Length: 249
Image: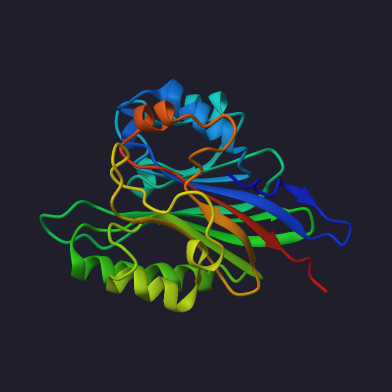
């Protein structure tokens, strides 16, 4: 596998960051394998879906973050599952957990959002896990784009479990406004679900205009990421992106 760019701050103040998106199925699988995968990816930002939401959920989220040398920014039960974690390189300006309108009979959904600064660069973040229902999913994609715009930052990054592939209307709505990072700079693997024998790409990282996408894909074959750990960690494969955020001029 080609080497993925490492996190760094460039002489002009631009930031190269690694962004990881991962559905962890409420930590119901091998947590040690999960932590090994996350650590090997060396992310600056982690967009988690299906974080623990029930008994002592904050404790479980904090434990995972500590195992990965990360900290929790926000989300979890208060966002109906999406959770944001980061390295200490990231400075947090503000966070907000958002619960979306609930359709009777369907699972409650939400967004974990944050505005962060990395060096001289500011970015807005939205972590999402969209509905299993096609119509609700499309509506949630629209709400996600509105929420990202409302963060009012020079750069925006969205990641999550879309619950449909690139040919679906919700995925298309996101990719029509934002950059689908895999399509811009494919690297590593493409398909993300199910982890044991992936046959579809339903997890993705998106970036607003102005963000330079250096590489994006499933980090199978990355140093320290074993096939056994990927299969044992959860039922999804992670998506890892390297992004360059130019310094403001």
